Amino acid sequence: MPYGFSFDLSAISKSFFRELARVARERKLHKRFGLKARTLAEKFRLTELTGLNVPDALQLVEDLVDVYVQNASEREQFEKTENRALFLPHCSRKYMDSRCKATFNPQLPSYKCGHCSEDCLVNQATKMGEQRGYDAYILPGGSCIPEIMKKYQYQGLVGVACGQELKLGGEFLKKAGLAGQAIPLIKNGCANTSFNLKSLEKTL
Image 1: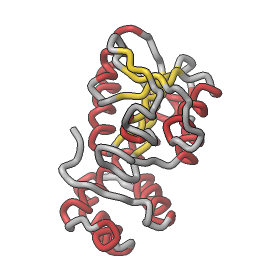
Image 2: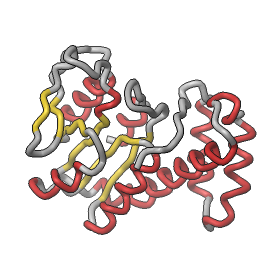
Image 3: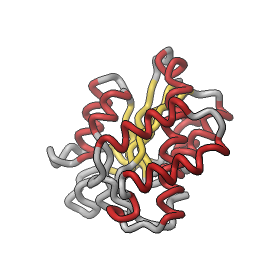
């Protein structure tokens, strides 16, 4: 389920994400997080820089921290896995029309990257994953993951998506007994979304 609002965190200082990671490590009780989220949103001028209202900014911060917490809790189990898959959002492709040479397989359902643009974020991420032994899938939505998992028995999954979809994906993995790692989008929308390649490289 995507957000009902758009955001772009690319203008936010890297120290914001370091602070998020720190909070994630220290967080003990979820109910105590509201004040911390508000403090982070105000400290890094999240509402001013993104144009979000306060409730949306707080929701975004809270979801991002949830992702960090989930990653930390599953990292050890994930590192023990061997057969892994990388799920990338199709909305991060450079082109969303015929200029993109990715081919869609309705049986999976997923796009396969055609490696047509060197500066395409999805192309770069796909190469990065494949070089590390991952099967890479470019998905039109998170609902495609269960269909893929019916056909292939992956042990570990890395997913790139907005915070809400990552949380839903985390619930699916938990029920399936699988280990996963998540990379949140820093810019959402229906096209031209983006994520941090360095974060992905570190996670892989």
